Image 1 (cartoon, one colour):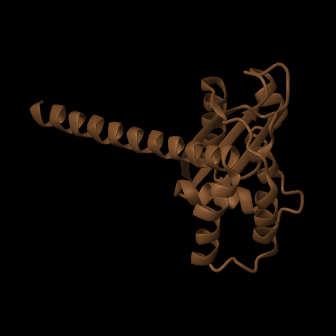
Image 2: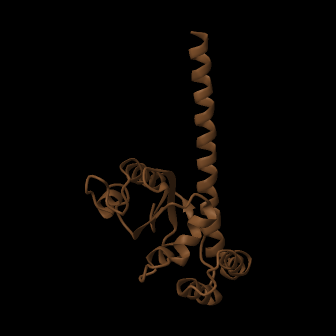
Image 3: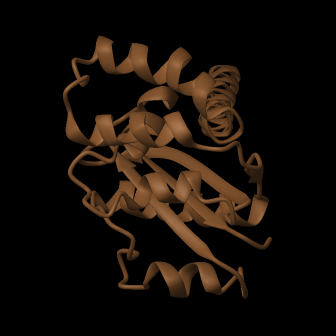
Length: 188
């Protein structure tokens, strides 16, 4: 009986550590996104250019377009964390992770719009989904560079001045090891 209790306590301790790490990661993602939104040139020189050099992306056309965009970008409002959006993002990240799938539709076929509009009734909404990046900086850079995404939709979501609220979830993924979902809205 005592050994079972010790095992139970050890499991609770481990789960609390995992929760603290996951919360710290999502807070770091939000902090990094707010750096680029509120001080684009500082982000460009202090974060982006060193990142591009370190990862050999200086000649990547998507990275170059981000550099050009940030050189002339004006500061915009910081994103505010939303518990409603965070729950939606977490639900989608868990669903995708457990099923090993990707995309904006839930594994049961529910569209992103229907899923989010069930809780956010008005205003703009958007979603970013990333697979395989575990570090907050890599997650944000992946979205900002948006390599291979001709619409640059992930970048546009992060830098859109009307999107003021965000929920972020980072969860395990059956195929890609980890996935990050960001749900955005203009109203909360």
